[in-house]
Every structure is written in structure tokens, then in C-alpha cells.
Image 1 (tube, helix red, strand yellow):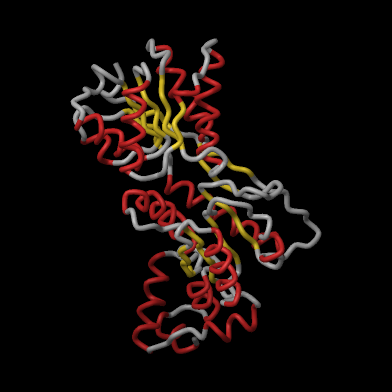
Image 2 (cartoon, helix red, strand yellow):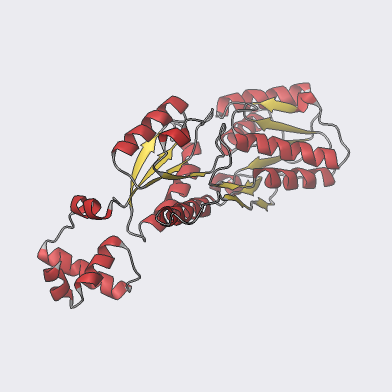
Length: 336
């Protein structure tokens, strides 16, 4: 480090701050230090540093990546938001994929703990997460995108699923659509989906309308199942509009309507909770509810780092933060 400091014409402490991200250093100085490190062949001894500080500057990311690339884009935007904060603060990340399976999630969390991570950011799978406090008793953790079941008040950053759905469905009703079908995930499976259904119901209730059971259709997050459920809704109900709780289901519904010759919005109006590029490119363009995935990840990382700071201050009691990020209705051509 002394050789690097001499070559970069800075102090040894400045070299340390550049390596560990522990203080603001200008980009010009950072570049000089990095060039000096390259020139001298210096590589920081992370193991030795962690033994001294009891920190590894490593964060575990527990995320559900499946085989369907259409659902993975959103998750990776969250990861980019997380990385934008952690990299700037000198942290590296270890990525663990649960494939959206609770048993695998437990396994991956245990694996990350053995790697001596400082903290963890989790997009939880469906199911009871009562095991988390015992398993992560010595670690700081934050949930993003989904609220875990089976836990008391926790730290999380999620989209306002209820508010986004309530606003969109209310405005559809005000357009004259009193017979709106909804494709939602299995009720009780994911809190996000349940909140979107709750927003749907609340909009109906506040407009003095009855939610008919046949308008509510539970659906797997797959294009094929959404295709089949859309067919059932159209053929067996008198709906004039449909509200879909995620992007993959939305693709299945649009596929069915196109193949069946049902025109959007002349025959049926459409809203999807999720804003992907295809919804704007498709003709007619689809009205969506946009979530800020990158911002969700960014704020989740900031929250975790704040918790890590508080961990060293025993006299301060941490109060869990529940952060709801606002959504935005993207009005396009799929409403009549």
C-alpha cells in the first residue's frame, strides 16, 4: 500500500479509502490509485482485512430466477439497482438463485451464511418464512419486491401493489367498465398478488359495484395458463375489460385475444400490472402499471447498509422500515 500511495502521490489512508469505499474520494484520485495498483501489481488481501475488521464487505443476494426469461428482466433490474449502491460503497455481492422454491431458498441462505457475508437482500419465495429470524439471527437482512409470509414487521422495499391496482381499476370503472375480469396468482400465494386483488376489490366497493366470483380467475404465471384462463373469461362471462396482475400473464392474454380475433380495445379493454418494452411497441399499445424496479433495488441496498451501520451502535434500537414505492399508470391505447 505504501508503494501504491507513493506512486499515486496520495497518503496510505487514501489508498485504503479507495479500496474499501469508506470515505468519499474524487474520481480523479480514485483513477490515480487504481492505475498505481495496476502498475505495482498490488492486490488487496481481503481475508486479512476481514480478520481485522470482522467484516467481509460482501452482501448475499437471494433471488428467484426461473426458466422464463420474460419474468427475469424485472428481477435483474432490481439487481442492477442493488449493485449501483453496493459497488459504490466498496461491497461485492454473492448471488444465490432459489428458482422461487422455499426449500431451495433455505438451502441457499445457509450456504451464504458459511461465506461470512455481512448482510443479505432477499426476494422471498412463496410460503412461511418464520425460519428467517433463527437462521439469520446474527445477520442483517432486507426484503425487496415481495413481503414474506409468517413474519412480524420486517424491513422491506416493495411497490404499492394495492394503490396501483386500485387507481387503475377505479379509472377503468369511471370509463364505464363495470364488468372487469381479473387474472391473479393463486390467492394466498404471494402477498403482492393478493394486494393487487385487494385493490381491484376496493375499487369495485367504492363505486358501489359487486365483484362477481366468475370475474376472478386464479392463474399460473405462464403464457399458456393465461391463454386458457383468458379464453374461459371471454367465453363464459360478459366482461368488457380485463386486469392482469403481471407481465407473463399479460402476454398470454394478448396472445389469446389476437388468435381469437378479439380486438383491443374495440371488443375488450386491457390493463397489465407491469410495464415492459413490448407493451408500448405492440399495436395497439397496452396500458400498464409501471413499477420502479431499479429504484426498489437501490433503496433496498441503502436500507441494508443503514442497518449495518446501526448494528455497531448497541445503544440505538432499530425500528423496522416498510417502504412502499409509488407506481405509475401508463395510459396507452388499450382502453376504450
